[in-house]
Length: 152
Image (cartoon, rainbow, N blue to C red; front, side, top):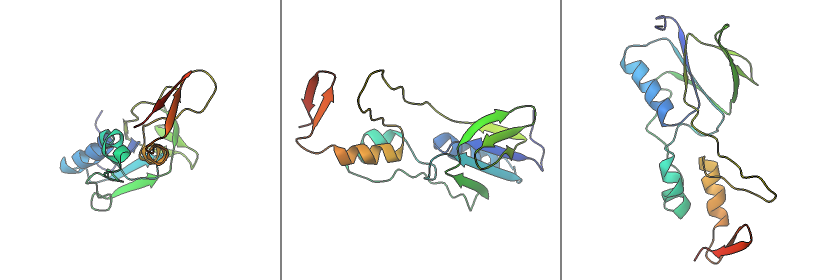
């Protein structure tokens, strides 16, 4: 189904797919409302460097070339989509429902946590990478079950 010329496209989450979806909508002549809902507080960024350059301390940011103002995107950072009412054509959020005529869901995956006690860290977001990097220092020990492993 095509989005009406005066309709609204809502994109849920804020990674590479989000940046491309917004850029493509504008390049293909969509001039109406374009809204991005992202639970994260960072504008769209590239995830692969998180486990490499960010974790190694080479860079602190992997921001994409995504100019929300230039693309006339209503960028709602810190807004978590909690559901979709398909019949009413609304994305549900804690900040209120957001109507859509076209919907792009680019949520990616959620890390799987293993059963059992103890703290578990994940590496999916920029904040995860920065927090993990702060804890990985030369000589630090990582517990994996009964074993303990040194970083260096």
